[in-house]
Amino acid sequence: MKVAIVAEGRGDLAVIRNILKGKLDIDGSDIQNLLPEYEYDQTDLAQMPVEAFSNWTLVKSKCQNRDDLKVFLNLNKDAFLVIQIDTAERVLDGYDVHLPQRTGNQNQDDYCIALRNNIIDKINEWLENNLSGKIAYAVCIEETEAWIMTLYNETNTSKYADPKRKLQEIFDKKLSLREHLILSDKDTFKKMKKLSDGFSKKKVLKQVQKNNKSLDLFCESLDVFKSIDAN
Image (cartoon, rainbow, N blue to C red; front, top):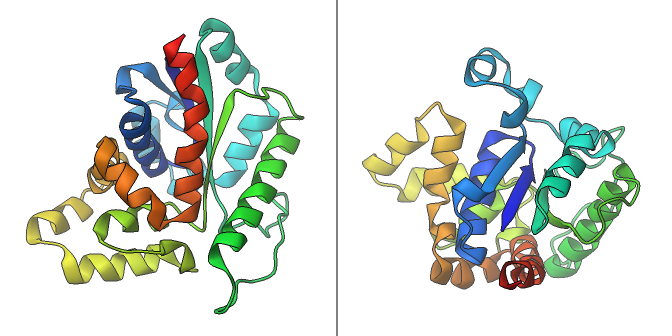
């Protein structure tokens, strides 16, 4: 089974690839990165500012100009796409997905489900409802770091409005010197791959996915693609 990923950044690619391994036992050789690394070589990436290749606007553009998505699916009969996007910038012009700000007494699962559904509707709008049934939506509320937190003994990680900051606090308290060295790696893909490596193990992923609603929903959505591999 072949998979192509459209993601905001290289770190997101690494996390998704680990999840695909743990959930569907898909090896890296069967995964193609359509965004961001497909479009640039390593020299280009090293010279570009992060915002130039790690941005929700590029995900939107890839969905709207989707020729290479169609080419991938046409060349690979038993294949699907993963489209990853964070929700942190959802109120910006051009993204335009609005929900009331989360509150302390709000049911976090209901909030995540509603926001995820709205983001999926927006992605399908960008796609003009093409490629139906061929997409797994990796909608990270608020950021991918909320998913990674589940691997570090954190529960209900959906509740954090700033998961990137919270994850750093966790690392400052819990990580060993060796693990802190991982954080200093300037290669974002390698760093995030190591930090999320637990997702590549089926038992670990199954155990921790319940600790973040949007992660759980993404993992559950991948079940439909098991039948592709079986065929």
